[in-house]
Length: 262
Image (cartoon, rainbow, N blue to C red):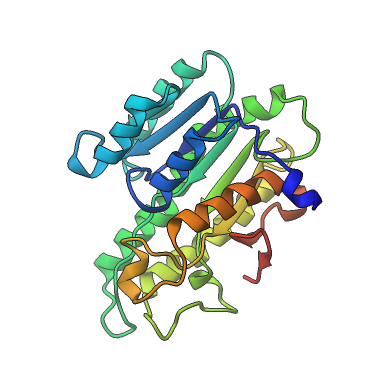
């Protein structure tokens, strides 16, 4: 089938929250691709901590994988990460920014607190916004210098890892958990993605909100028995990223690339 022929050909990829879950699996699968990106930047809050050991083991084995400290809630740490990525790219742009870092606090309508909701929103929405603002010049540079027509993840793209739990129409896994702050944050992230798609169309930067599925990760397991493995999800996601184009710009898409309702 034609859709299987599309190949992700990004020279450089940056993944936030890459020390566990979806982020770590993205790194694992990217480093073994036959046409792996020349640069894979894996960011996390504490690269020296025990939580990043698996990531460090990968970096020791794979040339071009660089672990960078970045707290998506801390503008100064983001600026330091941008400086390091800029230095490594030596004048080239950044093709693919995957805003994966996110948190989930269990809550109900009755138990949700301002503090918890604010914490989730700060990481899931504001963090994504300021990381994207900081890396935008590198994304624009990649788009300007690419010979590719149209929009694609191989040219310049922002992928915001969202959730169908934030779809106002579908409200995925409501019976498993109300998770009010998380749902509201993902609905807001979907709007941020839509706004980015409108704002960056002229720059030919593709902007997508991605639902990775309900996965067997630390986060997904909080709600019960997720049906999907992270390995399966990331294989599907990488295949989808290779196929996305301006047709999906500004949309919320499933891991298989189908557009989901807001």
